[in-house]
Image (cartoon, rainbow, N blue to C red; front, side, top):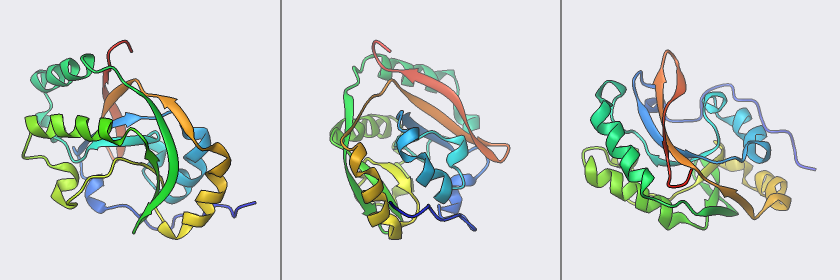
Length: 185
């Protein structure tokens, strides 16, 4: 039996994610029953955001997201048949524990297409030379062994994805403001 996740006393995520009007493009993944006990205990933004793979953050400021932007994203997603996604490994970054999607190229391709349209908005503000698609489980890399042991019986975790969602930080919380469904979804 693994230990109970720690309670967060101070945010363990980058402060720039909670700027009024900040947006993110994410692909929600129906993995809450598997990962939420860790997410909710280690990420103060988790209650407003479902488990997901990030496509692009930061995206345009919310006041710059107009019909032209949403129409382009609707057309992009409508032309993409989504794969069933398999999360097969628990890995870590220096500050987080995450699940690896076997279909990393699919997510990287989405990011690449959107960045090609809005090149002034690189993933993570250009902080990382390589963008690694992932589903964050815990914002505390010291929990790697505990998370790995806890999730081992659940892996591989297969899920069908349906859409990119535009989330915005507004009114002190993250909110889902637009859904861009993939083909057939």
